[in-house]
Image (cartoon, rainbow, N blue to C red):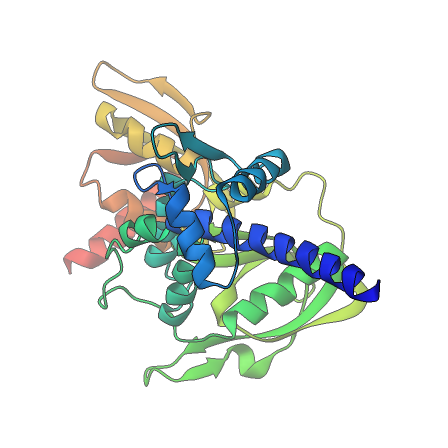
Length: 331
């Protein structure tokens, strides 16, 4: 009797294992352009040590469909099967691969690892099309793998609403890392992580500065989450608006600036400030955009690139500062 019970258990175990291997086979070896026949399924499962018949495979496929797997059958003299809808479609995977390859924040090593994992979500045939060659060795990539640990520490502090202690570094003229302000430790309450200009930043309240500032994640040194509760985010603080107003994340006093632009620059203004930006016609060829910006050298450099097609109308102090900087270039 015991032998019969054990044999039944083994058969049940074998059936469940066969169904899992069948699912793996269909996920990896099939797609709309590469279906597989019943005979091919039986043959491949047999190489793995599973005995199966057309009846048992049909039952297994029915079970997988009932479980929610989208298995499509092309009915013919030899039925063909393939996985239809996937959690991530091929075009979505391509977008993610492109984002990973082009990101300056993700190291070359991590890019390869992530793309390999993403390719596992497609069939082996689709995976080949994900090797799109967007990444080149000339693309600037970071070399510090610790940046992912830093980002994870920040995320945990945000979720836990706890303060952090961190140091910040820059580079000297010899391309050597040097801690800012002789290794000053910043007490920081992180609110959110954000991408800007191909870099990763964290916004939050700095007790050292007594205001909301940002840190570039890959420049943070030895961050630690403390047991102290974070300073609550100001109710009137809008991270999206703050990001748009600070060009390339330079911190200076925000000012309301009027920009006189030729009509062709409306797309540039919308790209930078959003479709809700305040704008009104000036004449048939130009319009005035009213924006809140950090009036820094980076902002002036952004205006300068349009070679007269964008002018600063007001305030006069910002316009005068722009003219002064432009004059310096002509000396």
